[in-house]
Image (cartoon, rainbow over all chains, first blue to last red; front, side, top):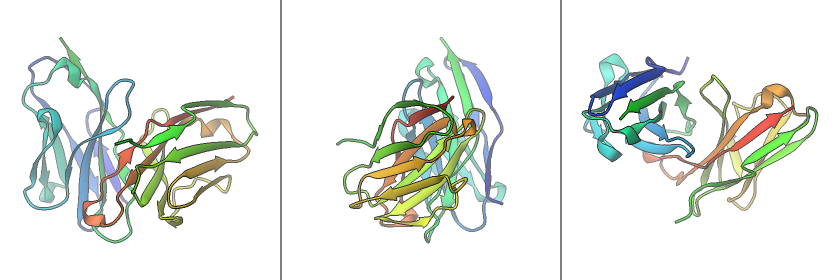
Length: 115
Length: 116
């Protein structure tokens, strides 16, 4: 079955701490991978995405993620978080080709950054 | 340019009533998606449109749920005889839709539906 697992449901960090949010997926075939972010009171926004090529992808606001095919993982990282990074983070996957466009989502990780 | 818009932003209804939720995609986007986000659960896919047709409606939870898209633009999600378990945030997304290999979905603000 297709699924996405986000290991951390709630993360609390202090400003300047490093961040790594885990994401593992189960999906047959080649995949596209996404991280979306939802800031308080705002709608979902794309943080970064992986389609092909360099497995280390960089997104907005200093975030990056690494696709490790052998581990079926796409972990999100940021070297130094800021208070403004407080948000809900969602990992998602869909099929690389064909008509399979629907995104399969993890349950999300709530990140709180203390100033 | 304008993003995906949804209306209403909030809807409170009584059990058994029908509701219609509207989505205006980004201009020029041929693909449109509906998802729902329930408390304590992740986002669930409901239906995907390419143009006016729906190649994938596998996520619609029951025959009380239906959706249509007209003119390759606006979409309406209709829930008939609402139940309390239908309470959720209903999200619409659109994407250029031309190539699956690079398609990215852009989300609207959602409609929060509360069924009393």
